[in-house]
Image 1 (tube, rainbow, N blue to C red):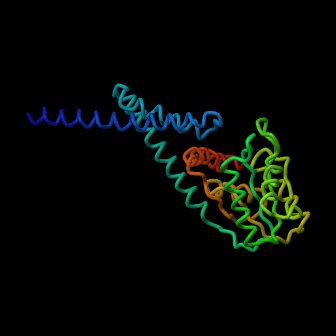
Image 2: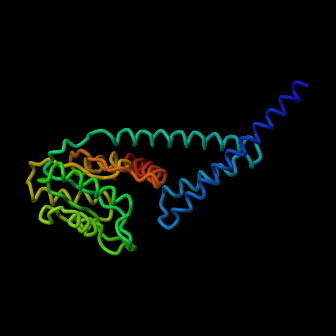
Length: 253
């Protein structure tokens, strides 16, 4: 009787687990699909996790699948630990507010205007400008195949439209990556100040840690003035950033 009762409990727990993983899997799948038109590595991670959860209790439990599940759990624990590290490390090395210049990192520009992430960076730039109006502003980013103009141009237009003097804004509009943003921005800074200057990075919080690392690879010791990460894209942004940080650690770019 005891073994029978124990079997019933196990079956009930398995049913509950199946319901929970199914619900979470469906929600994650719908969320991932909502980003399908801006598909990136973060979207893939979300969709992969959704499929794993949907199949978790439906795959026959044999030694091979149990070992595979064990590896997946370890992998996602490791993934989550890096995500927490990025979030915490991104809050360090804050700007003092009296820098000579700021580098505003570019992001997606849509036909309808700047994306949510880029708008957050630009609004934060306006906030910084109100604190330190003398700082030079370098806006960065070239033009992607699906963008109506360079990111730098869209950023400059946004800032000027919101009261920033055009003569303190400098465009770096040739880059196609964050690493190139810094390499090209360094040349602008050196032309403006020689080697004697202080500067900070304005980017979304999820991007701050890697940005500082890439700046150091380009010989620049910069602080950050973080913009918020839009809630709607936060899971995708952080998942993508984990993969980018691992690439930075392994390949130094």
